[in-house]
Image (cartoon, rainbow, N blue to C red; front, side, top):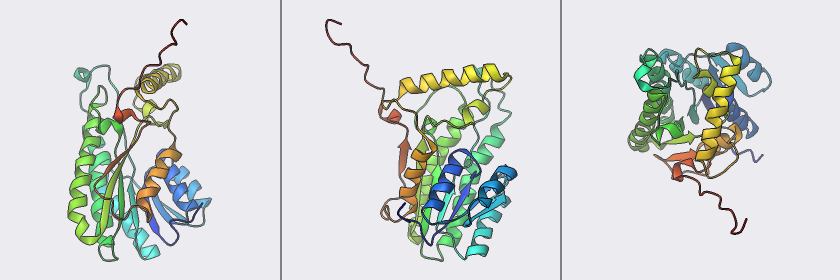
Length: 270
């Protein structure tokens, strides 16, 4: 590790597991002090206990006052905030057809995936503007870039994050606050299995295997992405390697956004 974030204070939402934990651990390895929140208090505290420069605060980002509290706590404890990662997200239920979707989880998905991102960006920038600037990284999704079936509210929320990020980047540039997006795709986390409802364990496993197979067929790079791949992209925006980059969307998706993979052709005569 190169200690890229030494002396910096970072806040990460949804940092107890999955992509968030990968981001928090990468930041810690690079010398940052990391304050992270999550609804999973047990797992979050366990992660914090294993690092001397980590502080965990139980946080439900669907409640904007708890997002504010998380950020204010970081400033109160460590005097500043240099990096804000709005990572927490939920997918909602997956239906065979949008016509079956009763939109019961619309408010929750929008609260977590969009409103919390807006609140985290706003509150972090309020502190950053008085300390010379900073970097805000919002997690969107390949589903926010490319249209497709299934989890419509999730896709809409992630598309909104992209547009909001660009708008915020324009306004906050006056304060040297950079705002960028990372769009993961096809990363193995629990979010896919959580979108399956009304299934037993065996059915969930088959459902997830089918989703993974479809995802593999859609990307040029054959291997599956990891939380570490996403953390590397976020590190680029968080540190000093991207001082003139703002308002961008970086897919970490094995080339999915670029287009369909080229079919493998059999040699003639085979």
